[in-house]
Amino acid sequence: MKNAGLFGVAVSAAALLAGLGAPSLAAAQQTPYEMINAAAASSDITTTPLRGGVVLLQGSGGNMVAMPGPDGLLMVDDGISLSKAKVEAKLHDIQPTGIKYAVNTHWHWDHTDGNVWVHDDGATIIAQANTAKHLGETIRVVEWGHTFTPLPAGGRAALLVAKEKTLPYGTDVLRLRAYMPSHTDGDLSAYFTKADVLLTGDTYWNGLYPFIDYVAGGSIDGMIAAANANIAMAGEKTIVVPGHGPLGDRASLIEYRDMLVTIRANVAALKKQGKTLEETIAAQPTAAFDAKWGQMIISPALFTTLVYRGV
Image 1 (cartoon, rainbow, N blue to C red):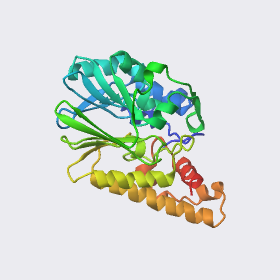
Image 2: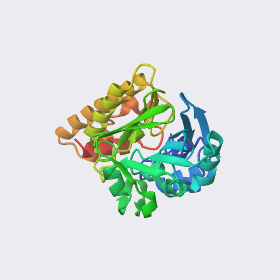
Image 3: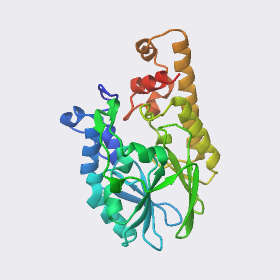
Image 4: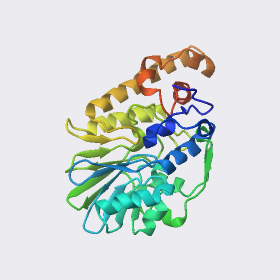
């Protein structure tokens, strides 16, 4: 892995999100927010049929899915707005009748920045109440090097989920469930009950250390609780769509949860010994997992920092 830089973002971080090669030196000097946007701008949008008409779309920030229905498409997450034309073209191939619903799994821009244009295309936006609130706020995320400003009113959720909502649509029934505060304080899972496809949002990053948004109510303990909730929701044949990374399954969810639990215990033990953050990072509490989980986006040092903050 190349130098992870100030924000713990590997030089090749954008590549994992968008399927590209390593960015140029100029890209490496950008903030994580700029890098991810640049990757989305230059990336193709790929589609992968899953089951029951559910289609995975990748190449614009976080993973997205779309499913056709009688009144248009149902989407879960809508990516970064600068990918609009490319995403629209792929959606038109799936079903050329507009968008009926767009679910936000949480507030982060790489999952919700398309809200304005999908709303203009006819979509009713669905989110947990805290996500809807954050989309109307100014929020600084230091690790990403960016201050987010409120989305226009049309880009904010019109239909709120308190704890759980069932949405029959097309040939399936979508079940939305709110997590306890985990990645943020407004995360939703989205489960296509007939297709047996589970979207976890950013409570699960497959093959990557996750980001934890403490500014918006996230915590390492919440991430572990969300991982356990995902394991409980997934069966042996469930297709699991993470917020970032390749498709997973129940076994990969268990591996991810075990990684979180072990690193939390390692960091907590060092902090209990009175070690400073710098000393804890130097002790490499993530070392056993870095080869698999620490090569992209969130560096071992940054993930240690995030865990240290919450124990």
